[in-house]
Amino acid sequence: MTNEASMRAVQQQTLGEPDVLAVVDLPRPTPRTNEVLIRVEAASVNPTDWKHRANGGFLGEPPFVLGWDLSGVVEEVGIGVARFSPGDEVFGLLSYPFGHGAHAEYVTAPAAWFAPKPASLDHVQAAALPLVSLTAWQALVENARIQPGQRVLIHAAAGGVGHVAVQIAKARGAHVIGTASSEKHDFLREIGVDEPIDYREVDIAEAVSDVDAVLDTIGGETSLASLRTLRSGGIVVSILPVGSDDLYREAERLGVRAVRMLVDASRHDLLSITDLVEQGSLRATIADVFPLEQAAEAHRRGETGRTTGKMVLTTGRD
Figure 1 (spheres, rainbow, N blue to C red):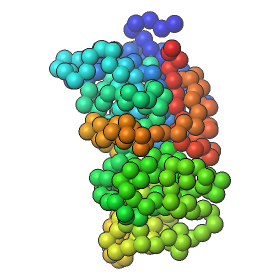
Figure 2: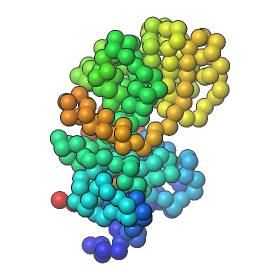
Figure 3: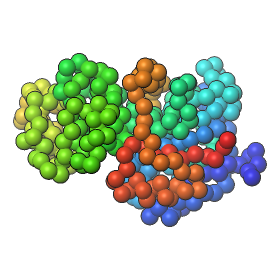
Figure 4: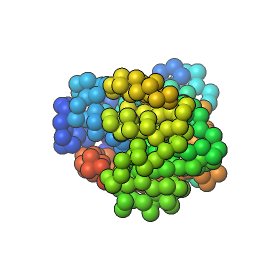
């Protein structure tokens, strides 16, 4: 049992393998002006979590608590918060990368980062969506500006970002080409992919052409190869924010565009995601659900690269 002044959280003291993760008691935060205190019901686990756990990434050296997206209940509101009241169910993304801390029983954050939880989703389903859906929405809708009838290539289309991006692209009326290993092609067809491609069997630049937009979730040579699938004026949007300038130079040479992006916390975009959910156009596939105490196992499973959809941590509440 925890007392009112403390909470359980998954923290690490050093960088390293999943075993560095441990559930500890930490002080429960207090909301500041324009912030809400959220009782976390569920929080998702994403590739950025195990990458930061192993090498620090943007966060540098521990100690820190990982986790960026969550679903929960407003416990307390800070001065100036009119949008929410205690008891409201919300979901959202903590500002990436420095707003981390969702793998805990409570978190404080600006109210502007959250939206009402979609009524048709439970907390596990809702927690699985913010980071991946906002990434996909901002890549495809805000950066690529995809239009009905356009051809869109989505890499790792069975993964967390990928399988949500497929559904967003289909909802926008696009023709979707998705890469994944052949054993995942049935899943790709189920979520709307028009042309599944086994990236292990073909040269993507030779197998795919006349694409209007590419969502690159892999980086490196995949980014460069993707440029050669585009028609004139097409765009590659990479969610890997750091990489060689060769991507931009090659894009200019080929008469196409390339951008790199990081996801933004956005209530406005969350409301657009909610509309898709309530229309029946978007739903996260849940690979597995773990209690906080099994966060290390969630990381181990994620690092295999063989999961389909999302993994979610729960705080163990009824």
